[in-house]
Image 1 (cartoon, helix red, strand yellow):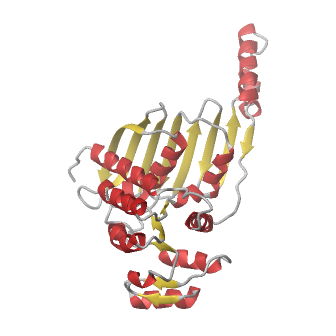
Image 2 (image 1 turned 180 degrees about the vertical axis):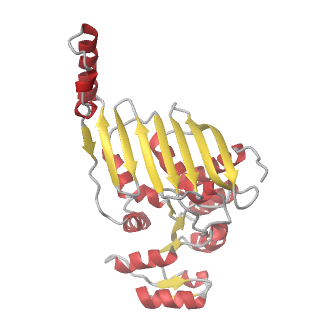
Length: 321
C-alpha cells in the first residue's frame, strides 16, 4: 500500500514527494527511485522535512510510527484499521488532539466512486445489507476477517446510519487458525433504529462486494466490484403499484401474466465518476493537512470503527475446530 500511496503523491501537481521511509532500506530506495524523493529507514528523519505523511505499515505498528510524527504536529493519513484495538486507537486520537495534528484514517472505500455517488442522494437508511467476500489473499492473516475486510463496511454503514451503535450480534467461523475468524456475519443495531447486516468472508471462491440500502424514500443497490449502482425512488413507482392493486381488486385486471413488473418500476442508474479512490483519498487528506477542510474520516471515526469491530469479534460464540 505504501508503494501505491507514493505513486499517487508523485502524480499530484500540488504535492512534493519528499521521502520514502521503509524498514527495508532496499525497498525504500526502489520506491524512491521510481516515484521520487529521498529514502530512509528511520521515520524520525521525516520530522522537519515534511508536512504530511502516509502511514502504511502493519496495523500493530501504527502507534509506534505515528507517535513521533504526531508529536511534531505532522498530519498523518493512517491506513485502516486505525489500530489493532480500541485502547490503542484512542491513544492515537488523543496524541493528535494534544499536538493539534491532523489524522485521517485510510478507509479507502469511502472514496470508492459508487460510495461517493451516495452523497447526492437524500435518503434515511433503515436497513443496510453488505456482502464482502473474496478468496484468501494471505496478506492480513495476523488479524481476523472483521479487522481485515469487514472494517471497511463497519465504517461505511456507521457513516450512512448517522447514529451510535446500540447492539451487536455476530457469528463467525475460523477456518485456518483456531480463534481467528475467516467468515463472519454481524447484525448491528443503531440508536436511531437503523439496522445493518454485514457478511464478510476471505474463504470464498469468488469476489463480491455489494451494498444495499433500504429507506422510506428509496432503495439503492451498489456493486463496488463493477463500480455500478441503481436507485429506485418510492414516488411514482408506489403509485403505479397501488393503481394495479386497485385494478386487481375491482376485476379490471385479471391476467397477471400480462404484467411486466420491470415496467412498473423506474430504475435510475447512479452517476459514477472514474476518479481513482486512492487519488480522491489523497486529495482529501492534503486538503485536511493544509487546513482547507476537516478530515473526511477522523481519528474518532477510525476509533469508533475499531470499537465496533471489537464488539463484533467479542459477540462471536466460540467454535472448536
